[in-house]
Image 1: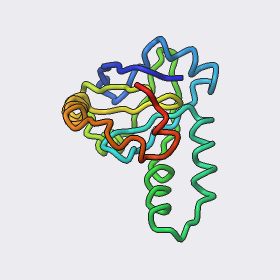
Image 2: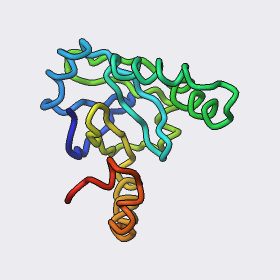
Image 3: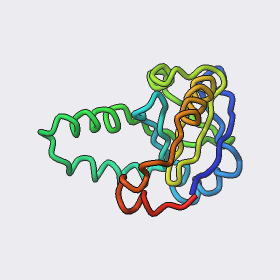
Length: 152
């Protein structure tokens, strides 16, 4: 499971070094094979290859005539790029994906359980602050039994 927020610098080639604490798990679970794609926010999603393949299998089984499904497939599968950790724990984020997420020099890697999000650090700080200001747990019970059962 991937947890935590990490501030990371991209190098001049657009490579990002994965924090040391995640590297062994990524090498064991997927031999350093990763997939990076666009997220539904202005961020990127980074998956171990087996996790992405599972998501991809589920996405392609959805009804292709549904407009929202087709959009999601185009975003997640259409923009997906396979990458591999090098000997120093880095991987290259393709330029079109860096442009999509407005990634500059400083980025934030956010653990999300089975995947990571990659955000431009300035954008992340701004969005996080907005979410904290909007945060309300009222109505949580109306969001389904699984979400309503969460206790903080």
